[in-house]
Image (cartoon, rainbow, N blue to C red):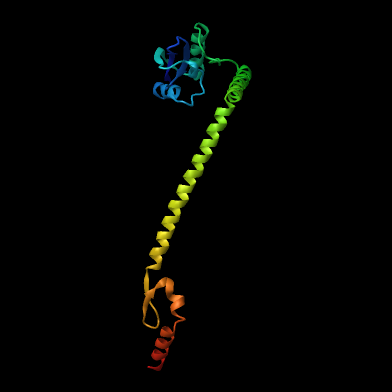
Length: 186
């Protein structure tokens, strides 16, 4: 079984280049434009220029990765990971890549600690306000349901029509007792 593979190039307005491979161009393009993009293309300044530089039919993804690696080796790119290498090398490379990402995040946090803490505090306040509003809405809905249930009228064994919520109190009244006594006499 074969598939069509694409090698693409993304160029930022800064002039830096990212090269990648895919079998679904549309989804890959969306992935690069997402704000949570963890790929090296996030270092390119937007707007991005996306172009397909090679289209071929492949039998194995490994072959597609090898072709991508050829383009990476022959171009100056921002790619941090190799497209293809042995499993052991890839594992080590991935460890280093994840370490660099953690280091960037740590440095960003250190440099923007006050700003991030302020945002965190603002988010907490927003959550508290949203929860208060939700509880208020739930309380109103529950209260409306209770009032609806209280308005339901039933017929007591003495013959009086009263609200369901008042039945226990009604049964203690002299009126109820007298009506029951009159029914039992008749």
